[in-house]
Picture (cartoon, rainbow, N blue to C red):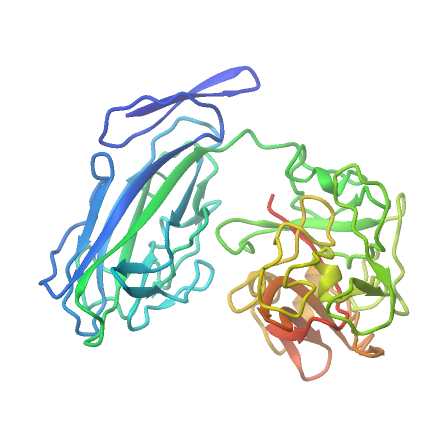
Length: 464
């Protein structure tokens, strides 16, 4: 048993994370207890079945011994967390390497994601968690049909969805209360591999680290007129639309939390007004950026454009509540500006590397651009507020006040007809992912790509 006390506002809550080893760790709220596993998959031997097992003492191997015949083989590991912390716990996972490695040979990570898992591809490996255990504030989010297959799987997983293992700490579960049910306390993680006859025989290994951390006492909810940069610091995101102030320039924006829109697990705080920041201003939060107002095409200079109908608002004026796509278009930015003018990175160099820091952008401090691409946060938002429609923009306009802010591409285009919004995700050396929505028959595409030199609108998100 690993036991530690969580001290919150001078009240001590005794909490424990149980696993079959003897140890004692002192810590406070948010201090993680980690379990590390060596996943060993040996090709060329018969499959060794196992039930979903408890954590091995001190870590250890979770062995899969499939024959290379194109079927899917999987093995299950159960992680159990017990705590009386009233605000629950968060479980994160990462793999030290994306691929399974055997000498000079590798089985690549599956392309499915936690937000958009897919059937495991040939010569790929990944993981799956049953819906009932994969929680965003109590809602199942992973896979299809709420299942990950039977306890012992030999070639029977083709109906189930997998994700590639993340190589950075990624939330796989968050329980916001004292766990009192099996679904809240237990997390069975199924690791699967799909070799083919062409897969080299060998023993493939990856090291996976799973960390449980106690959640802190919830922050007070932001109110009208509060500072945006305090979200996640001293304030939590409101669940109803609230106008907040960018401390850099006193501009005002609607914000609110929208469930199930975060790329790993959880909810996101979204701006519901287009950004209209012109650079400079008060640098209390270290988030002032140097950008230039210029109607010129560039992928290497940080430019922004002011379209007709930009109409930014400043404190104490609340932003527009128009649901027609017009009224407050905000400014347009090329991708270099949208990513905070990170010179020397792919944001401003017409190169695919080095990647820019995703936590740096034109957004207020503590905010960032949404993750783009298939299964990204624009897709999750469209699913959440527009029923996933690609033919209608209605939900985006009425539920999140999207604007038909148009684009700048040598000149201003499509204002009043469509809206185009950057993500913070590079697609290739010269383009980045974005979402577009148009009032005519084009509809919605939440995972399109655009040349980084053109000007698109920006909406920011905060990991509340």
